[in-house]
Image (tube, rainbow, N blue to C red; front, side, top):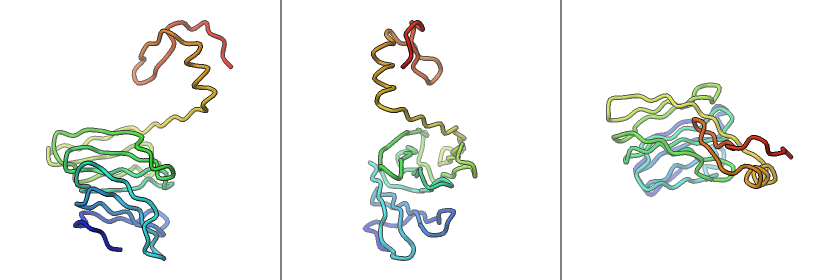
Length: 152
């Protein structure tokens, strides 16, 4: 397993069949242990100080030198969330059940974030947009300000 940058972190996934690396070349990578080939890579704007995958392997979190914690979907390589620290992040870890992410860095603080990813079919999203205007923000959820719309 060779990278173009200095490897800052390495960790096995829970199955022991994959390894995740964080490197100074700004890329977090998932490797297949048997073939020693890259399965997926995730590029960030800053050096990746630490990377980890959740228990089911569906998410990768990367703590970076610019203070960002980036969370990617490992199947699609989509960036699904970003969290921000005031200083470089040099440690990330998922809770065993994957519901929380712990991140820590040079600002002498650790942050526990609840991970809640919600996916809906395009039809459900289109129905919501068609039927729900105007909108209001209820904590982290977008809701209709006119609740009388018929649901699909």
